[in-house]
Length: 127
Image 1 (cartoon, rainbow, N blue to C red):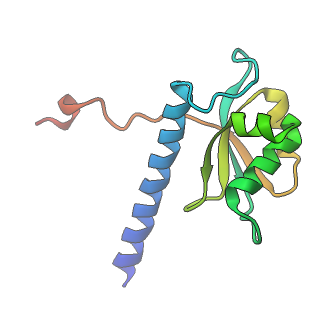
Image 2 (image 1 turned 180 degrees about the horizontal axis):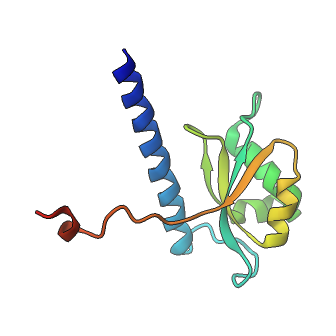
């Protein structure tokens, strides 16, 4: 029984890493670009409490809109909305916006997004 739960935990962790890396890839290609100055903004992952009575993406947009000033700006800045393994979203934010959103109710943590390279192709697999 213990082996099954550890395999499930490992699978969930891998799914979470894959979903984070896809949001970073979208940010690097310009998809979901925010209307903030590019030289100052960076992609951040905002972890939030799970909304009880609300659709997660609507909750994430409202949380982001409270800092950016409008739902339209929030929808532009939103890169990805996490709903399964974690509750939160990724968005391009300036340092000032990071400080502001960190103080919002329901926001647990704001961390810069990082790209982790697991391997560099077939040569690393020693095939």
